Image 1 (tube, rainbow, N blue to C red):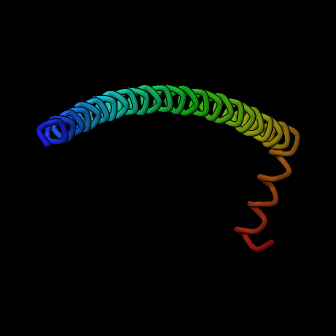
Image 2 (cartoon, rainbow, N blue to C red; image 1 turned 30 degrees about the vertical axis):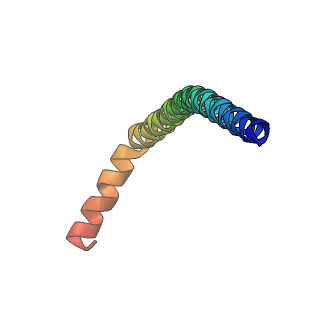
Length: 103
């Protein structure tokens, strides 16, 4: 009977050691997973920031190109109007005068 009790006590101790070992392994795995998750989050944030910066630069460059094109178009239009004025200002002045005077 004593042997049976000792055997049960041994089994109980072994069960306790196994449970403690499993708990320690579980905590170790949890710690590793938290670290991997944190590493992944940092890497994802770094990649996201890099993509945002790249997109920001691309948009800035595109806006600058569009602004230059618009400035060029405006300059061309101003030149066209100036040329028209220089070529026809006397005629335009006469036409305006006639409209005002009613002749």
